[in-house]
Length: 258
Ligand SMILES: [Zn+2]
Image 1 (tube, rainbow, N blue to C red):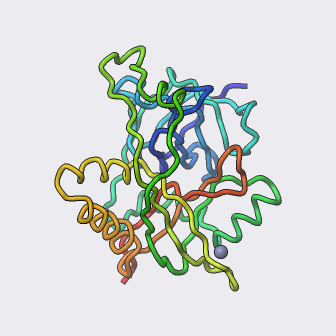
Image 2 (cartoon, rainbow, N blue to C red):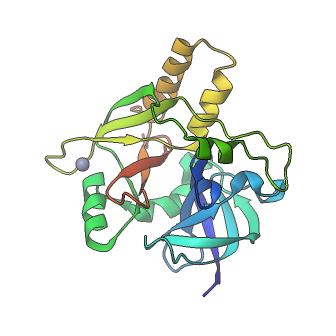
């Protein structure tokens, strides 16, 4: 059954290639129309094929018709009816991200290890927590090549936007290595897939040589976003086909309270 839902978008990943759906984006956020905030994932979202007026940003509230997804058993997943999507208020970062924090804070759980435990128990597939200690932002070569079929989908012009650029394969893999706050945690190393990260890479490569580019990415995503002056929260989610594999979908990094 389809229902109209509203959510604050907190996660927008770099587009991926799906054999079934073509180019899709993992979008997740927090329901603003439920008595208490709760997670919702939208899949599939053909973001770059959507009209510009519908192309929401992170921390914008959107409203759309959606229904539970029959092919994706993760409890938070909805299949959106994209044509019904409307874009609403953008929540700014004033007052230490207070407007955003009002939705995020109630969903913060103790740790990544706790989210894994819940995944085993009830299929939880999205979560937010404060990492105890972020140890590294590891950048290495992305060895996963696209096969011809994926490369073909990536290069396809859009039905509505014939001039759309093909999707670019990012030749690096970015991973956070951290310890969570569960006693005895043996560290987590998880890929970071935020679209903002890929965009920084694409933009900065025009400005810097490769070594400087990677250093600057590390500075921003490790030292700035996870530095001592920030109240860093990780948004994580798992993969449909590999439910025990969680990825960092985005970082919430308001200034720490003084
Ligand atoms: Zn842990």
